[in-house]
Amino acid sequence: MVLTWELPESVEVDGGTVRWARLGDGDRTVVLVHGTPYSSLLWREIAPALAERHTVYVFDHLGYGVSEQAEGQDLTLAAQARRFAGLLRYWGLDTSASVPTVVANDIGGAVVLRALLLERARYRDLTLFDCVSGGHWERGLFALMRTHHEVFEQLPDYAHEALVAAHLRNATHAGFRPGVLRAFLQPWLGPAGQAAYYRQYRQLAQADTEPYEALLSDIDIPVQLVWGREDRILPPEYGRWLHEHIPHARMHWIEDAGHLLQEDAPARLLAHLLG
Image 1 (spheres, rainbow, N blue to C red):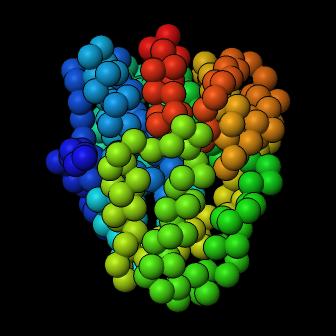
Image 2 (image 1 turned 180 degrees about the horizontal axis):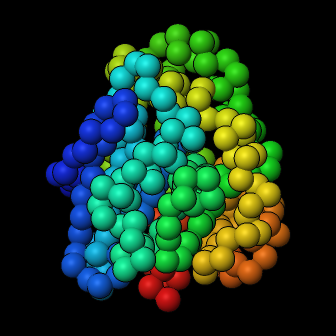
Image 3 (image 1 turned 90 degrees about the horizontal axis):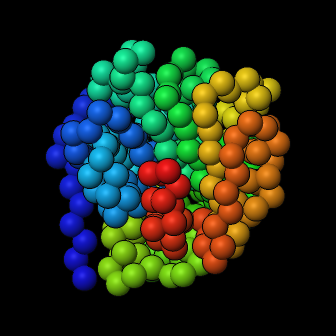
C-alpha cells in the first residue's frame, strides 16, 4: 500500500525549510500539530475530514517528515514554539478576527503550550491529546536516547531501523495498517535520516516545559483534553496531571486506544474535534 500525502507549500525559517499545506476553505481555521518521531502524515485522515467544514493547516516541524533536516538545527521545544508562533503570523492567523483552533499531540502539545504562554501566540480554543505538557516526562527509551545519543548514533543501519520501528509500534494499541509504518520510518533511514533522528531527540528536554507550568492554570480559552486509556508512551497519569493544571479543561478518555489516536481511533478523535 502506497500512502499519498503531500505538503506542496514551503517557508524558510531559522534553520531551514518547513513544508506545509492548506486544505478546505471554511470560516473557522484549524491548525494540526504533530509530535515525534512522526510527521503531518498522522493527519492524513483527520485533516481532509475537518476540511469539509473548516480551513485546515498542516505542516512538518523543522527536522521532521519532509521539512529540512540538517546538522546544526535548533530542534528544542523552545525553538519549535517560536517557529510555530511565526508560522501563525505567516499564515495571517494572529489577529482577533482569524485566531485558529489548535490541535496537538505528543511534543506538539508542549510546542503549542509554550507558544501560547511564552510566545504570545493566540488561539480560539485548544485540543490536546496524549501530549507532552509538563511534569516529569523524560522517561523510558526517550531518556536513554537523549542521555546516550552518541551510542545510538553509531548503531548499524539494521539495528537503528529495528529500534525506530519498535518505538513507532509501541505508540499504537491497534497496530498500523499496511504501509503506514514504512511511511513513518522513511524520513529516519539512511545515514542522514539516522543522524536526524537522534539529533531531534537529544535536544528535547523538560527544561523547556518547566518555564510555563505555573501558567497553565491561567489559560483562559476553551480547552479539551483527550487521552487514550492504553497509551504506553504517556500513560493516563500524564493526562490527569494536565487536567489538574488546567482545571477548567474538559477531559475525555478513549477506550482501547494508545498514544496515536489518529491511528487507533480516528473516528472518535474526529468526533471530539468536530464537537
